View (cartoon, rainbow over the protein chains, first blue to last red):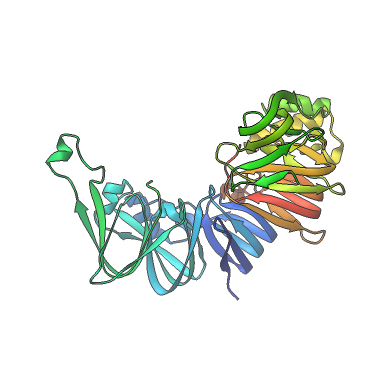
Length: 207
Length: 220
């Protein structure tokens, strides 16, 4: 049996360990039972040298620790809501600040995410998680999952964007016009548009 | 009993003759009826406890509500958990997490590390030092008797059973309370790698009972 993530209420995730490991955000353990060790994940979160260099170069930081052993670890982060997303061979793009934990069967990478990073102030890149297993993502308030289909593209506020999966093209919409120049803008100068087929998760709060 | 949940953040408590409650100062949101509030300093504790609480800047500044009516309590939008004590067990809770409790409960403030060693001056000093290191006040109130206690927390409260063969280890910043015959001791991880994982200090709860943990590392 492999390590498993399960929800316990809205704000706590249990990691069930059976001699294996899960990767979690550093410092997110609130309690544990059994024999579990917490290690700073090796150079670059165990992603390998090239990916770590890429991460360093792009400023897409990810501060992870590895929980190894036998038992149950309870994970939570500042009372945030937590969403478990199951991946079956597909890829989830996620804001690195929203990533709480993922099962050891998954791997992470840094991907270029177009222009949205610039407007969100999060760099031009995003973290991607792929493989078979569950990912726990943090959401300020209960998260909302939006379905995207070819007829129905979805436009979201970059500051509320958590992650996305599926065959999606990412675009960038500006609402900047002459009103913005005289300080009469709507306060929503940039938006992220997704088209194709897939899902987009947002949180009911702006970072 | 007299504690009624309005929602996850506001608690209604009925006060009457012979039924006074002690609450955290400033936690009263509103009341109906004829209720008076006056400040008290709860928990005598040992000399070490007093010294330690002065050092760590932690004290249980409480107020008593007397008269007859209903009082609404809440604090900084934090959530809370209500614990009903049957008289057979003791609740150990960090002093500054107490929202409100029945005034007839026995309470004492003790340094956390002194629970096994019996308290005193040195234990107080040691506790203040560890409190400073973990960034968490390690002074706890011990409440016993028959009555209700409301304890503050950030996020949700998770209750984990503790058995003799199954100790529970808790992040000091997420520790809320322990109930029953539970001993809580502070330990540090010596391995360098583990220290860097951000989980260097840990509280180990052993014995028989439950330990309450909040879904957050936000300290008070």
